[in-house]
Image (tube, rainbow, N blue to C red):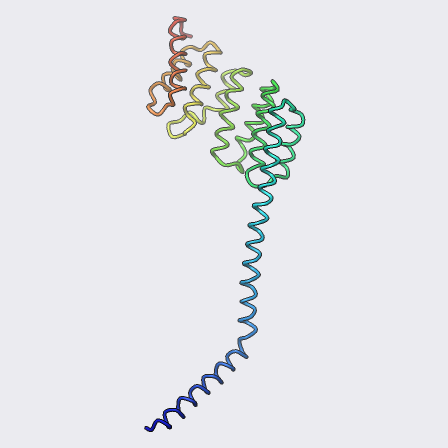
Amino acid sequence: MSQDDSSFIREVNEELRSDAFKKFWQRFRPIIIGLAVLIVVGTAALRGWEYWRETTAARSGDKFLAALDLAQEGKTDEALTAFSALEENGDGSYPVLARLRAATVTADRGDKQAAADQFLLAANDSSIPAALRDIARVRAGYLLVDVADYNAVSAAVEVLAVPENGARHSAREILGLAAYKGGDMDRARDWFNEIDADTETPAGIRQRAGVMLDLIAGRGETS
């Protein structure tokens, strides 16, 4: 085959490919363009949503800090109003944080029973992350030691006083304090001994349990 023949065949193949491409493009052009537009629009929408989420969460963060400042300044009514607004309209984690902080402000005002009730409502709300629910339950328990009997305290926190729960140390301390306050020295001793026997007990709680065991021993009584 001569060079001229090869060139001719190559030109024919290129023309055929060009014609095939034109037919392909004419047939599928709307689909290809549509997919390209969807990709561009989808990417832009995702970036816009991420920007909106970050911006609104930042605004909620600013409002949360402002509410904290009000609480620290002793403006509890204004702080509670601000936290309530965040709970209703905040973004990200701020509604939950505002809810828990509002309960803390209520406790700081001296209404421990109302604050404990607020913490328990949060502790029983399945929409809140488990770790925060446990924290709310512990906070309720410490408040209830001052205002309720052992049964009420037990109903609130004994569910946490199990070996696999990270909040067990605080729950056992709460239960021991409630039993001691109620005059049940045997039960109080049992809870404080559980604290002492647990090798993972934090040092502060272990030290306080030791003090309570010494107090119980000093009383020289059982119930």
